[in-house]
Image (tube, rainbow, N blue to C red):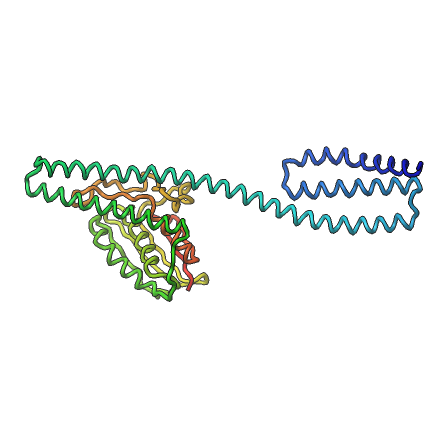
Length: 343
């Protein structure tokens, strides 16, 4: 019984000699990475066991042979444990980082949703108020001049088209976010998509005195869905035309590289502030006022339709659904949007 008590006392004493300074050291490591803390905890445990074994050997409770055996077992166990601690620590650190990123992403999405609701409410309320005023003026006979009546009808139709486009963008964005997007993948000549989109965008560009130019070259064939790719190109062109000042140029180019087929739309907007570049594809982000050309009216006198802040978000969602990538960068006098798609 005396040997048992002495062995216990030696083990406790040896463990405390290591555990107390080890606990202080772990306390100082609280601000370090999870991997360092886990490895430090394992090191303190192994050293505490080693101190107990050496104390027992010092008091002659262990033979030289038994001491060598225990040291070999402890060394192997410590090596395996340290490797496991490194793996577990990195997994815990990765999980913690992922959780933090998920919380930050959720916070950004919630802020984007609130901003989107505010923007959409404004974009719907303003044209609705104008349409109501014009409809009441027509109904009450306040406006009787045929030219003015025709102008009111044209304005009502233009605002209706604008609201219809906004609702269509909201529907498309909801399909992307809900995972309800169904793509019919096929081999698509990108040049045909660009040609059709430019043909549709030229009248809008002409109203703003903006030239749309397609660069010559070999247009690639990519894997994609025709309606969604057409929308991607159309949104990029509309965005470029909207932010290009009068007498400016929008250039569309394409080609192939090691990543697949690519499409680039370059405008003359004057560039995007560097701090805004990471947010360009966020929902409801419209950019700095300095980037928007100072023209409050279209050439025909109608109010120029502003963007709803959804077009580039839809582009990002559709390109991602195609397993592609879209990026933006500033170039001389403007900015350049590049879409990469699988060949």
